Length: 152
Image (spheres, rainbow, N blue to C red):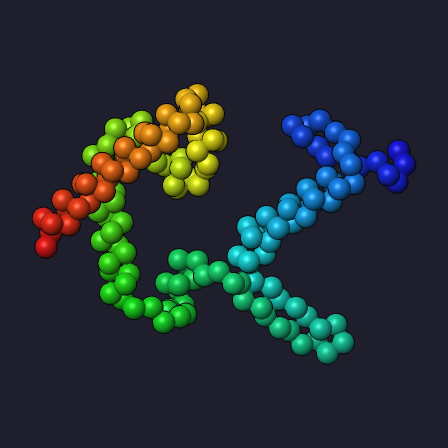
């Protein structure tokens, strides 16, 4: 194996790729690690000469940290209350649609998959999926608007 051979492992198989593909793959893999791990974990740096310890907190606050250490940033309670009400209303609205419709909405909006990915997974045409998505969103919107009128 020479210096110019680059390999990636796909489904347990070693596949030779070009240098550009190899570098691009590892660039994006590092980006993913940054967002999934590095932002979520704090760091402790110890200066080997002075023994001084510096703690760099994570850039993401978990619910556990929030409730354990108090409010780390200014939050307006009214905004949170409105968001909670909206979430409860959405949860109720989701109960008004079929299991198949909930699955489609879950895949598209909560798992953030593309229409193409969902249409391939569900084995339906992309145009059919798009039409169903719009129909379901109209149904949810109608329910939420009616629910909003009833609560006022």
